[in-house]
Image (cartoon, rainbow, N blue to C red; front, side):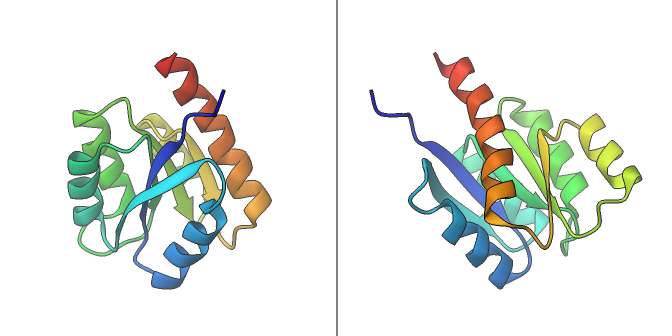
Amino acid sequence: MAKQRISVVIADDNDMMRGVLRAMLRGEEYDVIGEASNGVLAVDIAERLKPDIVCLDVVMPEKNGIEALCEIKATQPEIEVVMVTGNSDPATVQESIQNGASGFIIKPFNAARVLDTLARVGTRIRQRKN
């Protein structure tokens, strides 16, 4: 039986970071269905496309990742949100987890760690869908 593909939205204000993440996920069991360059767009795209996972940068213009996380979780608690950050200070991690983040990817990231984090989240999504 083919594994169910998992839909992902990537939200990061850095084009290159979005490109790197997209490249890492290509060919794996993920479909990158949307991208956002700021927190406002991230919330909007999550609302419209209803992805399984949102990879959300913590530091973004217009609305930061934690604010976007709170809004996404308030309206769509089933979406798994993985925070992407170059700033892994304990306060940020704590605040994200308290607000419903499913995992963390620390920049600069390596493919193995990214895929490992998403695989753990993906397992939870598949268990819910079955």
